[in-house]
Image (cartoon, rainbow, N blue to C red; front, top):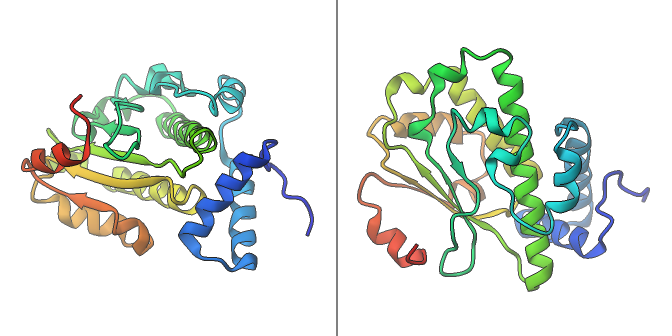
Length: 232
């Protein structure tokens, strides 16, 4: 088989990435090769290339970066509060928190080229976080995944526009397809009653293996998080 363009220089990192695909899709060599090559092509053609991605591609394996360090990061985090590494779960997963209910959608949609800029920000965030997960996996000799928290406190019906839902769907599909086995669990907290229908629209295109890791709760989440996260 011809070499895959975009394959990591570090063989150990490449092995971790392949392991994620095996864990998600089984042991069919032809299937894994097809999906892995598709992911490498996505990363080489769809990810942002402007600074600071040149630094993030190299240093991302070695340490966590904050959301504001991403392409368009200082701009995006004015509207979208995201904590990339907020402590660890009890089983060692780094915790990422997105306060979706606090997103300033009305503000960001008034910004010039906001869709393109936000897309570059989020793709850079996902890829950089993935690099650190792969680097941590090599260091600890275990498959490191994230524990994701999505806080919907403050979310209104008006925020669930088709634009917002389509963006969320596209991000989740790209994440599940090209970065498989990257999160151990996703907990949605402070979910209002109307979120169920929106989640049905977004999750319809996701594989069952992804949907099975998602736990949607209202304000009664404290006992669950206390059992799974460290005190901080």
